[in-house]
Length: 407
Image: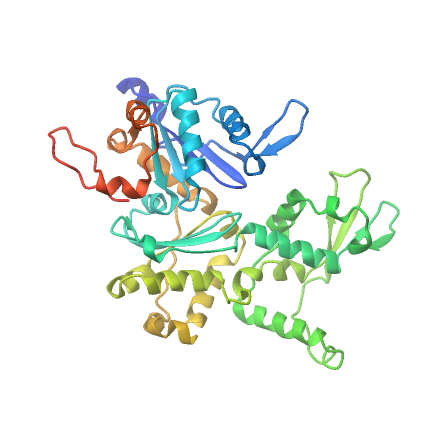
């Protein structure tokens, strides 16, 4: 066990943090899963909660992080870093860890690279489908190809927004007396559809349809726009027309009566795209297309998907279908030879904490101290170096030879 080995060796086990927009994963290096997964927020003395991203000033954010990292005294730390996170956010984390808690060292490593440690591979294209956005970055032989990264607003927040719109148009509120009222006409509709309620509906009821069934739904929806064709096109078969969702957290015993088709239609926004035709499949294909031609097949054979949105049933199978279908588009003609070649890895854990698990594996390696930024070095420089510049300033081995750093 990591804790027992630490006692024998006289060295404390590293703490691994993966700070996401919605949830944070934390635990110890060398363990098979995070100890805790909790919302990225703090509770104030008056009982209200505050989310880090909604704090305006640096002072407020620093107070937040001081409370957030309250139990990190004298530990080595591994931070699973988001490539798109701002320098100010990373610098603020470093300031709290090094100056307030005085930790001995910390390693900031990109989530896409750490995810590959869980599979024992060095080359893949990684799709991180989180709360705010979805992002793809190819990794080849341990090097992240930053020139080929792609991102789009296709995270869980897009699904929640789509679900909210569908519920406003189609759902009905049933009160304790059995009276029904359309959700759109309720004065408290915004209160009823909180982020927690939307997340719970997606987690409990939603699933992603195969491409053929999704096409049938699109055909039916298009037909509903015209009164002449509405009755001619049948909707795909459903086990039941609607289901009830209890709103137990509110006063009374109100329930939402939700049409069953919303279970499928709420998540279609990830694959249908907007006016620019940006979908999860096009993000992956563009990343592969921007990579060197001689590694494209390797990347197609090694697709890794991480993030909480990936937990929706049917995600991976639909993604592969969409990848093959998008190869018919003219802009992806150069990738037509990859049709039928796409393979998606199944990591040894849930997708929402795979990046954390990679950090836990790396944090248990003997090379962690040499890769980490010591507190003395941070205080001397007064700033946190960007992880992309580490290859230009490789750490020194004990015999004085430079070691090549792969990021």
